[in-house]
Length: 620
Image (cartoon, rainbow, N blue to C red; front, side, top):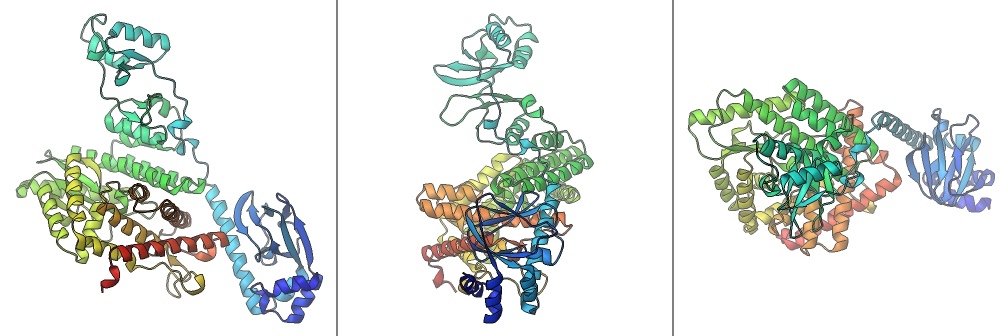
């Protein structure tokens, strides 16, 4: 048995560097321990004096019942107590039947006499300690309001009261009173055509001294119905109410009858720092100082969401919606301050990752302004003044400036709709770097505030022109293969060897960028108008561009890459550091590192697909 253990030790790094005699002695003195699923080994005891090596099975390291790391065959635990006092609550638990090799503390201390061995385990102990500190720091942000993740499926919605189109207002009022509701749906021949509320009856009948017995609900109902799907988040429902200036939404899924009516008071019954509460605070903000306070609350909420493990796609929607509402409020406050009304209708656009709803914690501004018609100098000065105040307000709130000045305060990103359409024509006939950058930003556009018809007109024309420009599509695809995933020979992760990012890799340029850029290119070619990358993947799969398996691989890889990116940014913010896009593979568990490698392989496969489809190897 001891010779078998010695042989196993000889094949495990860094013990493989020991002499045969040292391995033989250690193997003879080592114990073999079988542990059952759920069985725990406490690592915070003063008399703990063992180094454990997993011969077979899976173990998890816990700190106060939080999972710190997942370990498999060939990995060690228990070494940290030889370098520092383990925190209370640290333990190892078996996930399945596992076999351990228990090396005595005396033998392990002899191992540590070798500089290489000491350096290896000391480094691992430091990484583990940092990971535990991160978890404990995150715990202070983890008291997230339960409403953060709730959808309308999680809310009890009473079945709607319905009346026929020819029902009198007086009868409808009696029915609502009997049912204890403030609204009813109007139905005709199986179709739901509108809604009648107590306020409708008061304003349109009682206030006008009309006879409610002689007027039907058809004359007072609001139509068409404004609906929300059951899978949508509560804060999304509230945002829709705010944007439409209404107090109720009909909960209805595609192809089904309405499930019920959700009211503003149902959403506002919750207290705390959550999306519903903060949405209301944004709307109520009377000046920029109040808005700045809410912006900080939004940031705190996002950090708690990361700590709580909210999915990265859901998190993107949460952040984008909150930022969208803040920018709409900034737009409204500045318009109210302007000495003159706008000389023409205009709209503000979010571009790039902000437009795709994929900005997280390392955010900057990507925006533009489009107005309806060419104006004289006096009129143009209005938009210049407005833009300067708008960007200044965002900077003051905490939105960083775009390092490439893609902001409406830059005159290059402020133009009439005709100028914008001309710009699209010019880009469609070119393939230089500037055209690729501008096209990519515009293809991700999302309307923020102002006249949405301008945004719709530009987006429709943009997609039609660019999808017909084979040369520009080819060069856009080429950008997606220009940056290679940091995966080297023997499946090793490649990190920076020196400088500020020594030991780290750029997860954005090596993984996220090739996916977002390449998928955008395919999306415009196949007339997919959605902007979020996950939605583009789904639509392309539906059109047969991706197989079911490959689409799932792309989506899962993109989600995991973004998850690692956001998690690292949250750690940086909690440590008072500026968030960036670099991660340290050493701070990942072995399973996370393996999954990261798999994600990079999917990115490489996707780049190969683009190269073949667009014949990119012919480009120099």
